[in-house]
Image (cartoon, rainbow over all chains, first blue to last red; front, side, top):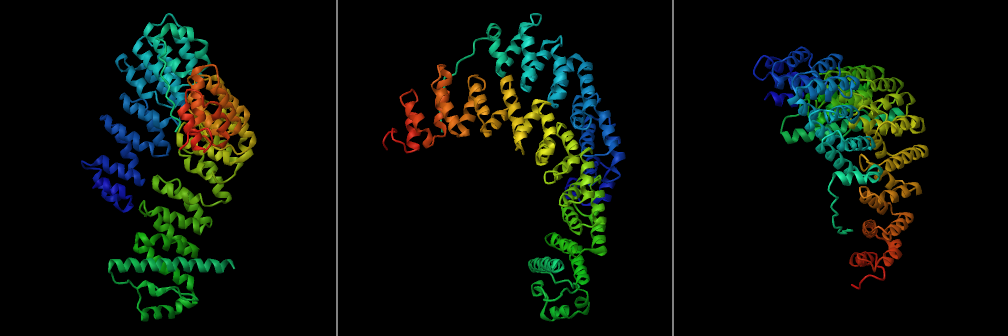
Length: 222
Length: 377
């Protein structure tokens, strides 16, 4: 019912919703009040964003993202360093248009400081930030001593495409200090990108990879 | 003349509202609530309101109406609006707004804040119709509301106005945390002061905002060329978004062409946008770039498809030449592309390749354009 009242978007239900803030349906009431722009929401949101429950903090990110006041941005900035990967990632995504420099700094910090067993998750959660923000993260991850992280970064770099990715993939494929697995992954992703860099380095790619299978061509003009 | 027009449109809105009211009441089977009478000059179709003849006569004869039609109409419309019938509200509010004045504005302002999400657009639109300094100030204030539905309705309403204060407000709103509605405003409004804000919005990384900001920049014409040029050099994602738009000037088109060809040469393209742009750009430079890309196996399909879709005779000749290339992989793909959209100009090229390994497909294409050389039906 509370969700229904929220969907109705009628300010005259605000007192009913405010009363529900004290009950079990706190989060539904808060969501509905936030949509109504109710003034009581600011303090409640602050409390929600400091909850010990990560799903509460995740909801706080969602509700704060829809607000355009300075306090909301400030709180999102705080949540961008949240210990929970999902909350941190959601806050960084919400902030990438508002504070790109801050997001670049916090995202870099999150990847660097993540525990070894969590680094892959953190990188995966942040790989779809806008390319100008995710590319430096992937660059850093390419140097990771854990090959699994480096391979993950290579694949994400391949998905970003572009000449800069191709150049970086070539440098890894060429790097004899890297493991065979990492070099092969880089070569494979580079070959998929195509372009002049691939044509100029066919010998290297052929050395690292199986020859490309020639698919038989079927013309279907209609 | 203008006041006559205004008067007649008020009556039209009012008649429409009353007709809708009558229909609603008939459907609901309720008794008609007494309304303040409304008629000035020729009475509108009051009989459709459900009033009896006697009531209608009383309404028409009301001295208040005859002496001050707008005021009476306003009160009647306010009474209808206050009933909150969703189907009547919009018409009633528009009528109130067209009558205008302090009473109308105050009524709209008082009810705007308390309106439901569904009602907000009609109230905001009515305030925009009133359109005077105070109504515009109310809408500007509402555009900063903490309630997103209020903000959206206010921005939509302000978008229908082109006054110095609204332009100034929209220019400033481009630097707010949600610049999308302001960017949308400049899709239909040329304003040199908006260019820097639009350029910034284009860099936001939010795909919707970027799209709207770029379209708004294109809409600014020649004055935005320098900004477009800067954005083209920024990053591939932004460049892809720019290639989706319609460059408004020759110079902008040339800049997009130059960047597309350079990216084609650099390879590892981030998306199909470059091909889509070169397909639309019928210049010989674009065609030559596509021919070159057809030689690279990773871009071959896209390049040939773009050449085929261009449909100009130069591209047709280029495809025909590629179909006879020494590289078998290229030749068979190009020959196939030549068959995809045949028309009468394709005939000589199709006849030339009719003896190749795509004989059946070529014959079918010749039949499609009713050219001799295809098999008989």
